[in-house]
Length: 323
Image 1 (cartoon, one colour):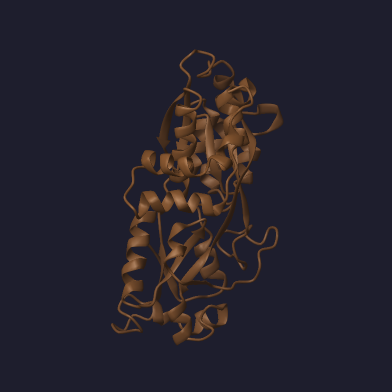
Image 2 (tube, rainbow, N blue to C red; image 1 turned 45 degrees about the vertical axis):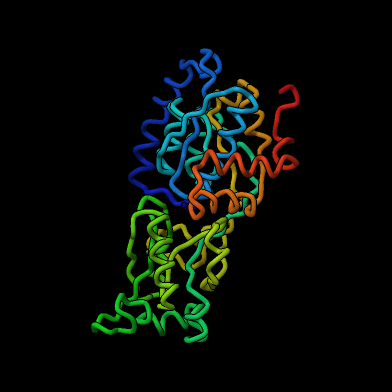
């Protein structure tokens, strides 16, 4: 999960290689051109993205006769895979204007904006409602600053440690959390648990015991259906307020999530491209499929098939007119 920030060192490396990628991609054959009819989908590591990938893969295979290949990569690598002709589509992009500028530049265009997914993205810090009930106002900057010790690992400074923990997810997600901690001078440190699945499991355990927990989280997200959560109120995002990643005095921006295509894939205008170009659904749609996978134990294929069977009025308009 990401905001628009991109590490400066990585950006320099990417910029240095962009021209090389452009030269190699221009001469590469595309999947549909070489007859393999395989659509290569970058797969990022959160449940909602997996839900989207499961549904569009199922439709590409069963309705259009394509094969699909899911490439498990982090967000930034996914862009590099598109630019180097190793993937065809990113299904859920959170901002990354810098990467679009780098790889989608008109003179060296390797990727194109694929339009909205229909999902609305929200990032931020969350805590259970029962924490706010016990400490009124703790969901504000001032209240959080006063009560960070509530979020120490052993409870309210039980071990003498007064530094609270902000529970993070996958450390490869690009966040602005440390910059916010620095700007607002919060006595917090970030604890990464490794994955979205691990984070949700830890939050649910603490929630079941009604223990305090503060964590980075996002919507769309199926877990909101069972957890009563409150988003911490920070000053509203304004353009450029996150320009210094070490000193960020605002909340995350809101996102209208979009797709990103490899330019050659879009230029082919194949039935696969047209289906993905047409594809839009809601947060509720995504959450329904994600919950079937993450909570109900269905395989991605079975979850996609179940959703598709129940929602023909939603997905049939995605099919190309000549399919």
